[in-house]
Amino acid sequence: MPKYRDCLTRFLLEDAHVRGALVRLDETWQAIRARTEYPEVVADFLGQCCAASALFTASLKLEGRVSIQLRGESALRRVYAECQTDGNLRGIAHFDTPLPEQLPLSAFGPKAVLAITIENNSAGRREPQRYQGMVGLQADTLSGAFEDYFTQSEQLPTRLLLFTQGNQAAGLLIQQLPEALASSEDWQRAQALFETLTAQELFSLEPNDVLYRLFHEESVRVLETQPLAFGCSCSRERVESTLVSLGQAEIEETIAETGGISVHCDFCGQGYHFTAEEGLSLFWPDSKLPPSTRLH
Image 1 (cartoon, rainbow, N blue to C red):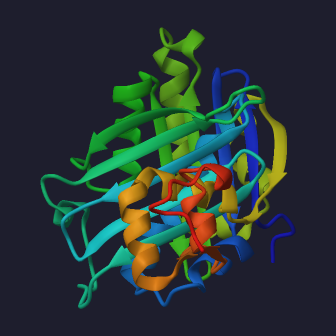
Image 2 (image 1 turned 180 degrees about the vertical axis):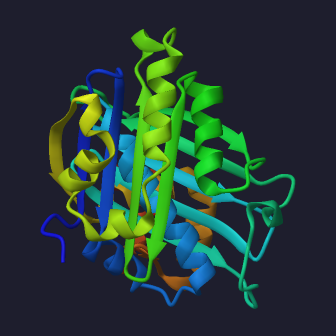
C-alpha cells in the first residue's frame, strides 16, 4: 500500500520546460463516494472530475478553488467536483435511473458542456472573483475534453490521464511552460514518456517513484506534495447568500407555507435552519421590518 495517499504532487521537468502534477485519492474519494450509492458508470465520471479538480489547483497562485461541472442531456444529468487550494475536496453527481452500463461522452448530447470555474478568494476581496471557461464534449474521453479546454481557453498544450479503480481515483497532468512554446521537440518527448504510464502504476507506486520511472532523464524535480482530504465549503453565510439570491418573494412564500426555512447540504449532510424572523431579516434588518412582514 502506498505511503502517500490522498495527495497532490507538483513537479517540474527542468530540461523539457514542462510543469505537471500527480494526484491520488483514496480515503478522500471513498468519503465522497460513500454519501450516495453511485452506479459504477456515474462513479467513474465523478472520480475523474474529482481528480481533475485537484490537478487544476496545482498551477494556481491564489487562495481560492477550482470547480468542474459536467452538464448533459443523458441520464447522468450533472457531475460536479470542487477542490480548494487548501486541499479540501468535495463532489456530487445527479442522475436518473435506469443507467446504461457504458456511457460515452457522445451520449451526453449535442448541448452538453464542460465548465471549469476558478474562484479567487484572496484577502481583501469583498466578493470572490470568478473566471469561467467552457468547452463542448467533442472528445472521446473526459481527459480529452479537458485537454480541449486548455487548448481553447489557456492556449497551453496540456495532457491528462485520469483513472478510477474501485475506491481510488488518480490522475497525471503535464503542461508545456509558456516560455517553451516555440520548442516542440522537448514537449513531444515528454508526451511520449507520459503515454507509457499505466493505471496500475499510478495506483500502486509512490508519486516520486512514478515520476522517476517516467521522467528521470528529464531532470524531474518535485516541488511540493500537498495532503488532500474531503471537506465541504458550505457555511451558514453561504446559505444566506443563496437565499438572498432567490429573492424576497420566494422566501416569504416558503415561510408562509412552512414557518421557516431548512436547507440541507447534499455534499456533507449539514443542515441549516432559519426561523421566520431570521429568514426575513436577510432582506430587512429586524428593526426595519415593514409592518406587512413584521413578526408578532
